Image (cartoon, rainbow, N blue to C red; front, side, top):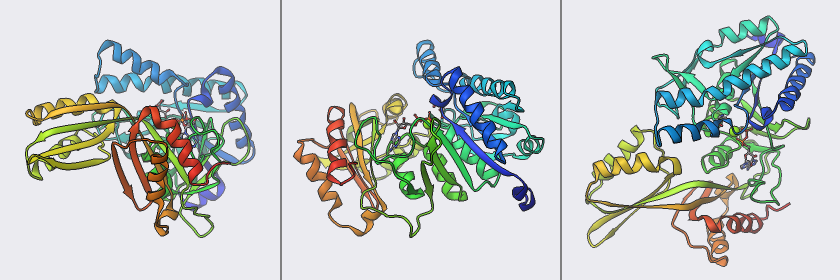
Length: 408
Ligand code: ADP
Ligand code: ASP
Ligand code: MG
């Protein structure tokens, strides 16, 4: 989009999550709010998720018919939820006198690779949307879906509508993207788990990427990575209130940078332990290469030796247990695999940690005081992360939140 056009029209990508369009009343409220923003001079481009609970319902149907199945048909099924919500929202806007059109990904040229159920967007053709915007139409784009080079429907992974929105904002050269959701801001911990969590008004991309990758599901991780790469500021805000929420931006001098910004958790983690493994590094290289080819993201890895044999433990998302085990049994037939399922990952994140020693010590001290054993642990410049038993998650999250001075 040329500068002239940008000056004329303030193109605003607005993404509405599942709860925000979870009922007919809510869809009508969104329609009203979007029309108000258009009257105020914006050119809204909407990205919408399936109505809340719908994608889970579709996952349940798939699990009943063919447990563990992944592939073309699975993505086709899961993508159908968004077709309903974009159509209803378009109808609601038209009923209020506005002009709106729903679009599926293939109609707009939202191309992805062929990694079904976790596809990555490779290209977006923004010309069709811009044409609609020029004509005063509000385009309503189905989030979470794409099309591969063989015209198959693909999906971007759970929570992927955020990524559709940010990728679209980048393609339209919009400087900001609004993420409307069921919380008024990004909090210092998931407010459902930590009642004393506080709102964060500004966050760096770097911290948000860590929070998303460590399980905070308020933003899909790819959406934050794309936003950082293309310099699209993110505004996470409430669908139900008008006030500002959290701005996710480039780290700058304005930021307060407390030592720890947030406590995050991921309840859907599993640990795989393998013993005895053949000795040597190449077996590890081959194993993790094969996992990555299947799109399985391995998180924390620890390796040790016992009686001259190699021992390996790593964490993966719960939903990857089945494909991981089938790959392991094929490739490492002599290794015994133990799966620990009732575990969760608890982490602290903050760019301020870089210049402060003693953060890891305080993290361990807090868990030790609560008598919470750790299965796996990892640290980076700006995070400390541990896998613990799920039954301790509540106490660990609230305890760490208090220990690092984050309570409201
Ligand atoms: P949407 O359907 O709008 O995409 P999601 O359910 O994907 O919404 O994300 C919003 C939810 O993320 C909130 O309801 C909240 O429970 C959860 N969440 C997890 N961590 C955080 C956090 N640090 N700040 C705010 N919300 C969080
Ligand atoms: N509907 C999809 C899901 O529930 C995508 C999204 O909501 O972002 O995961
Ligand atoms: Mg979401």
